Amino acid sequence: MPLTYHTLKHYLPHRYPFLLVDKIVACTPGECITGIKNVTINEEFFNGHFPDEPIMPGVLMVECMAQVSGVLGFISAGLTAEDGYLYLFAGVDKVRFKRRVIPGDQLIIRSKIVMQKQGIYKFDCTVHVEDELAVSAQIMIARQEQ
Image (cartoon, rainbow, N blue to C red; front, side, top):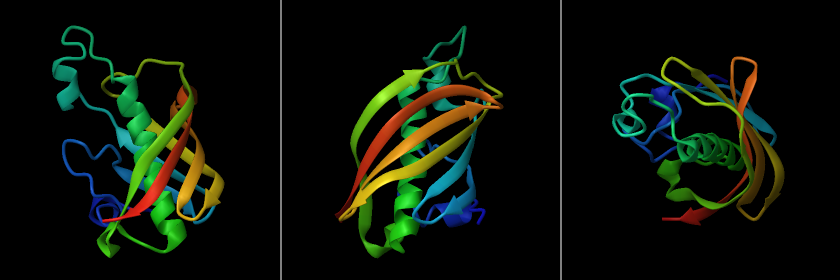
């Protein structure tokens, strides 16, 4: 179930420069999802983090995981952002940064549902660059009516 930008925008309210998912390459509703983010030197955040040694901020990698998890939440619930709902960040635990992410890297973002109850989801998430783990975390999101 690949989702490109044109379809992805129905599941996420984020837009440039804060849409941090380029496409969804696999999704099993109610279970797991895999997304891709291609990191380029043209990213706004590289202007200040750091000009002479560009490194993707860790909090933005966590945001990548949250956005991919939000897509899984919407798809699992049979909803889109256009139905008048948002998934909001409710928590993050067990964050571990293992590798720098630099321009030219392709992030493979995986999220797996570990708990779901009444529109609240907890996910185990990872970001890999090729076969190397860059970051892992548990993400919690909550569905809210707009």
